Amino acid sequence: MSGEAARTYLPQGLPIPVAEADGLSAPYWQGLRQSRLLVQRCRHCATWQFGPEWICHRCHALDSDWTEIEPHGLIFSWERVWHPSHAALRQHGPYLAVLVEFPHAGGVRMIGNLLGDPGQAVSIGAAVDGVFEHHPHPERQYSLLHWQLSSVR
Amino acid sequence: MSAKATADRTLRGRVAVVGIGETDYYRHGASPDPEFKLALKAILAACGDAGIDPRDIDGFASYSEERSEASRLAAALGTRRLRAATMQWGGGGGGCCAAVANAAASIVAGLADCVVVFRSLAQGQYGRFGRATGIDTISGEKAYLMPYGVLAPPQRFAMRVRRYMHEHGVGQEALRAIALASYHHAQANPRAVMYGKPLDAAKYDASRWIAEPFHLYDCCMENDGAAALVLVPAERAGEFRNKPAYVLGAAVGSGYRAGAIPHNSPHYASAGFETVAADLYAMAGLGPSDVGVVQCYENFTGGVVMALAEHGFFAPEEANDYLAFDNLVAPSGRLPLNTSGGNLAECYMHGFELMLEAVRQVRGTSTSQARRNDVAMVIGGPMVTPVSNLLLGSEATL
Ligand SMILES: [Zn+2]
Image (cartoon, rainbow over all chains, first blue to last red):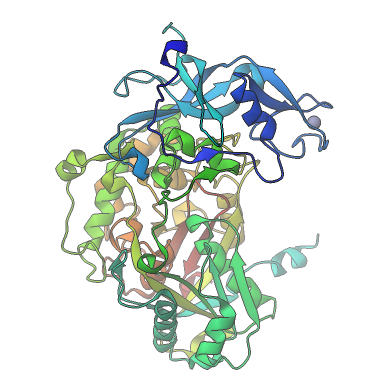
């Protein structure tokens, strides 16, 4: 996708993701900037966890680790959005958002956009691969993780 | 635990709703009154309905980030002594029944004797819910959603409903039937914002998509107004002019890790009532077949499908058959639903208008009276966490 680095799936102007003041999710956002997908995994009981928490929900250890996983998953659910809820999306749409499940990481899920034709038919269970979208924002660089059908190369 | 201790720890038959009141309902931004004044008007109306001096209220209860604070209300109304001021945690309408439960619990525990439960909302004054413009950066749960265009409530809930429809084979017609029933009932209710604006299947089908699977008519309105009810100990219920509606049961909460963000709750395709419905029925000593009429919070129609199934009215696989228009309308339907028009077509008071309608059903004064009105259910806030529910009944059910 390097030739399309300047293109973004949604128009510019939506809120920029940043870590909380307490830094809980900072490793996740830092990972995306390096084209790495990081998910919390407990050092003690190996439970996967996303979104991040300060505590393992299974064993209550307070020192969860971050583990890099392959950005591959399955579409768990999806929606096609028509009504713009933000000024940046006016005159834009429809667009697709998908909920992707990672069977190789305890079944945790993440939201992203499904690249390609926004009018395409979407199948729950379809395999998808991650595509990192880097935003060289002058003050705050950030990256998003989108998805494309695994057969699309 | 002894049987007596268990029996003591119930709301069943302990408190009664003796007054209900509301302002006129307006389209969002159209209220001539500011929000706090709307709250006062609704509270005065509820006290007037009960035939009670507003100065005798000694408690206030609300939910959903209510801005009209108990202390300010008490000062404005000349409340002689304030004894209970409770707010339910959690956003949206999930707290509408919980606010009644908290008020009832205050009374049963002896903390207060006459509690007003209310919700006030003037979006012209404070801005619309779900509007996301004007934010430069975002952190926490929304950081995983908003940059992908998942901003407003319909976008946050559509994929939960899509997953439910996928798992259980629920069709678009089931969602449509809920919208049609609400609009049908609103045509009999002159208070309804959508009174005089009927909806039929063709109009629903032709309406624009908001976020698939939600058409325009699957989404609640945004409105201005206020609604309130007066709660007293059951032994005092006879002192007031209206037929009392007794609390038979109430429950609040959510299942295992329902609040796991973003969209990581283990039981994702759910309205959140798997534990809460069981608690409600256990307290009331009733089951779904005892319920004659249901007011179910519709942020979106899809949540109603899930919530009704989780309360045992039908199995999820039966949704397409059960959720037919004829089954959902008063007086003769199997389960008359949202008989005032509800959030979709009466007024979106974050579900509190549903509470008043349940009281009207028990009193027998609804504009769409169900044939069986001795037991009325209210379901609050499907798909949020925590959620809550409530059963009201006539004296004959005690
Ligand atoms: Zn652990």
